[in-house]
Image 1 (cartoon, one colour):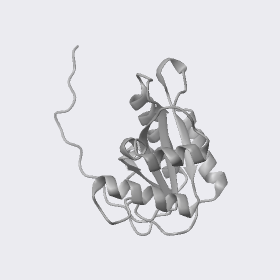
Image 2 (tube, rainbow, N blue to C red):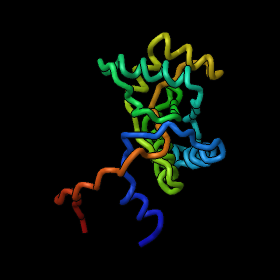
Image 3 (spheres, rainbow, N blue to C red):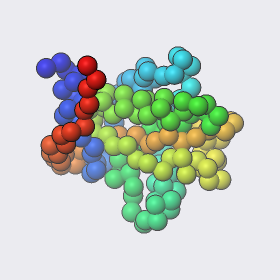
Length: 173
């Protein structure tokens, strides 16, 4: 089978990470894959904020945990957070940003890097503290958080894939 299709079938979310930092060159390759994602009308509106700074990462984790009402690290100890945002007024923001997230997770897998989509970016960047993080990154205007793609090296084996459910494809011939 084709290498890309194999990656789509084999990739799993990583929910336990070693503290080892991913090299910047590898993070940049993952980001580049995200920037090449398909997007509505070729407008390329999603942006990515790469967070490797421990203090900012901890603040993001705390905000994300507060949205979900937890005290644990919702980023599973991953040392890297790639935040995908899109202009709030753009009608394709969620679709385009989701494609960016998918590309980055597949790219990470192909490089031996664990990844996981962490939700609640929308809520975090609606909060004043989230907006301060956007300012720190140099983003002005109204942005909607689409997702957080956490990256790192897996601390243990990833879960096996569940069998695919049947009855989800319909044909009109």
